[in-house]
Image (cartoon, rainbow, N blue to C red; front, side):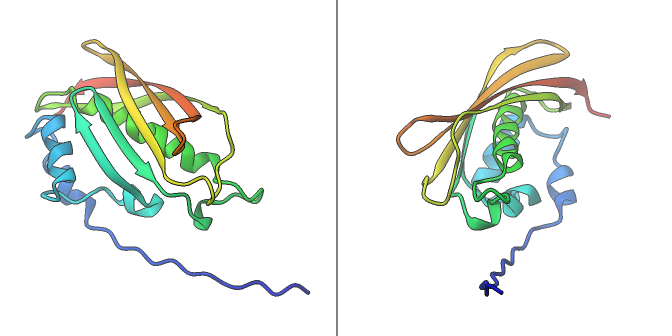
Length: 166
């Protein structure tokens, strides 16, 4: 029998209701900038996946991730769900930056293309999402995940539904 060394990981997060309470009261860009500045807590998913270094401007969001063993699938590479989560975050948050106070959104779809395997040796990944087109009810965004050599690792498009918040 082969011996394996157990690893553990502990993380914490803040009550997501505190950040959600600001939805509808501030623009999407204001919310993103407040989160980046530490005035609002990051959502739990950012701690779960261990995303870092977010940037935001109107119509564009970037986020980074250093691949870790806890991201791995049984094949010894970063799980496609982790990569999809990065792409979804960047694309949807880019749409969020275009929304005025009182307007919300949700993802309708996410179409992902995986182009390169990712391991702990890959280095820090950068995922940049941009709004391609925004209408009154839907927005189309794309996200590109690149490695430190600026090679495309994965790409996604996402459609978001835009609606007034109650």
